[in-house]
Every structure is written in structure tokens, then in C-alpha cells.
Amino acid sequence: MNDRELDLTEAQKAIKSKYPPITKKYEYLDHTADVQIHSWGDSLEEAFEQCAMGMFGYMTDTETVEPTDTIEVDSEGDDMESLLFHFLDDWLFKFSADTFFIPREVKVLNIDRMRWKIRSIGWGEEFNINKHPQVRSHLSVAETTRTVLCI
Image (cartoon, rainbow, N blue to C red):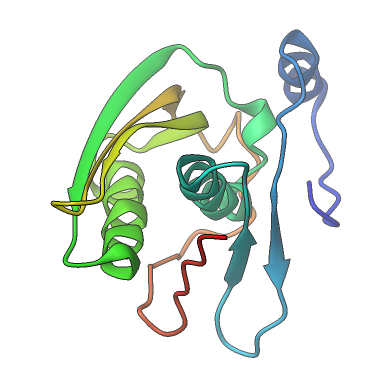
């Protein structure tokens, strides 16, 4: 789990072994007060997906999550940076206030770059403290240093 070792139970290890490993194209950057996630991908969609998975990966080992349910999330913004902010914030809402949904995988279905809208889907399940190791419990999306680079 990205430079952090967790003591997984046998049940958690069994879940991890049932599914292929998750490709992680993100890293956590050092910061005194916040968590900063640097994500990348072969497309803008993949970079957004990886950013969301980095956020959830900071909360638990997402490889212990089983893809038993799906949730779709629609987000919109005023520009690319605010779209990323709202995308992450809307996914965090699904975890913290709605259904306690934790995804094993997030896929961006469409990014509308004219209207700054995004449609995404996640496969996962309801967070269960007895099943999913809790790394961090309090997380919010901050508007401090968001940067979206399209190269």
C-alpha cells in the first residue's frame, strides 16, 4: 500500500488474493498539514481515476474491497481544476455521508470539456471497519494546490 505496511488479517489477505492487483499511478507527497496526491495516467480520464483511488487508498487498503456494488457519480465545475475538486468531493460524499461506499476501482465514463462535467462509476462495497483496515478516518478535499496538467 504505497510505502505503508498494514497488518492484514487472513480474511483481508484472502480478498486481496481473489482479484488482480490494482494498478496504482499515484503517490503521496510530503506536506506538513495536508495529504497531497500526485496522480497520472495515459489520459486525463485515467489521471482523474487515479486521483480518486489515491484518496480512497489513503483511507484504507482498497485491495481489501470487493466489487459487489456500483455507484455512479456526476460532477461539474467551472474549469478543469474545479471539476477535479468537485469530482473528488462528490466521491468523498458517497463515502462519508451517503452510503459509506468505498470503491475498489473508479472509472471515468465521460469528461465534457465544453460544459466541465464528468460522469464516473465505481465498483466496491460499503465500508466495514471489521473488513477494511482503517488508515485515516477524517479526510476532506481542500482547494489549496490543485493542478491539472495535460501534456
